[in-house]
Length: 237
Image (cartoon, rainbow, N blue to C red; front, side, top):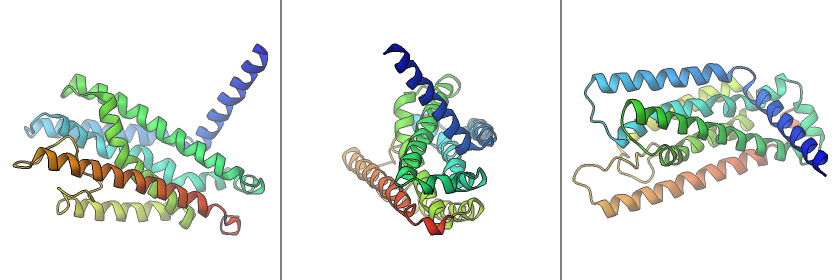
């Protein structure tokens, strides 16, 4: 019994390592380094410009690096499968592709979540004391929303570079809309840790709750639609 359990753990661990290797295709380390470089750059610039140190400031500093972490595996995941020549194998096993990609997406989000917790600890030491776990949870709403959207578009476009262009254009449009929607529940980049000046706290908490529901539901819809698109085998192979 103990031997069987050990063998199952080894198989489980090797499966995780193999899927992570396919997902990130050896390039994720560069996105991780770029994410940390942007985090340091934004932190230094904010401190140099005399920005007020607060939880809201740390949230803003970590938001773009967090999105950058989820960008590559979500955008290029389908193409990495094709490049690794396992896309045909996945589509040859009925319903297996859904389980594979669902597990992969969970692994992607868990890994990004853990990295954001580390960023939170670094921020507490270097910038301003925050709760790393709470910060990571709040950041996962916009990060997960953008990651799920990228996955959905990757199943529609089926090309990593094409999906990347679409997501960059959408990201720019959302940034442009962020200012007009600054106090709206529809703002993807709403900062829940930064109370606007002369704004009622109760109303602000209601907006935050609605915003998180909007992002959470949107993320689930994008994921389900992306998985649904994987039914059309002819579009991929």
